[in-house]
Image: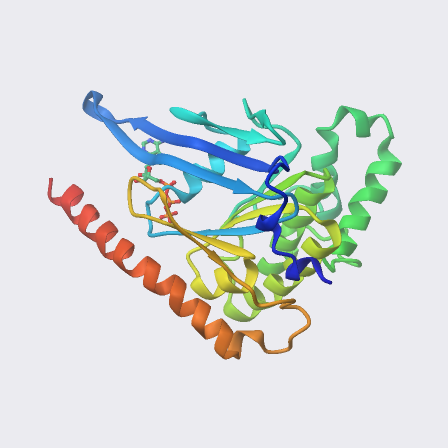
Length: 286
Ligand SMILES: Nc1ncnc2c1ncn2[C@@H]1O[C@H](COP(=O)(O)OP(=O)(O)OP(=O)(O)O)[C@@H](O)[C@H]1O
């Protein structure tokens, strides 16, 4: 049985989830001394090795949610638990891949991946050669063997994002957090990278939390899709996507099952998108 077929959320009830969001809320202070509730009372468990996708209307707090899991931002209420331990700040057990590649332009692909390893004191002790070997392995994992010596400006957008993924995985994180990582790519490159990401996930068993605006992308990638409400963001519904191994089926995106899931997620989102647009009008008029 492939890991894709595994309903990760059916883990034994007593099992500690990889990530637990407990009554998580985030309020920002804004000008004039007022506060702005971005997230409210988010409760969610992500099982070890699960691929969870989060969708929601623009501004509902998806990136804020990822920032809280990564530890870049602190919650106003509630907490994030990783393996049952509260997250208090960023750490190497959680890697983030952003929409913009965030590669260092003066370093080659190889040296960009090595950069992730230079932050690890324990791996540093393995020495430069071990780091180089590990970086090469991860570039191979994302299909970039032969491109190690290219600088970011010598790579296509898709290749740059592969380097970013290799860099994120090189430090062997427990959790991979991805914030619209393929949004800037053309449709063909995006589809290819989605399939590749699933293969990498199957091989590494990393727990993934992936944010997207794309409903097709959410259904294709997610074992579960968490649909968020408009601001303040809450989890509206969790859709359990049972499409089997997407990488084995040549044309899963054209199947009636895929269309049914797409419709389900879109129906859940539709009202929230309308509400979010109304809220934005109120803010711009007010
Ligand atoms: N540092 C901050 N200070 C004040 N408000 C903030 C801050 N960061 C985010 N917000 C607000 O919180 C809300 C949620 O932002 P966030 O970026 O998480 O939404 P999102 O769902 O990722 O949006 P999008 O889909 O458009 O990328 C937005 O209304 C945003 O303006």
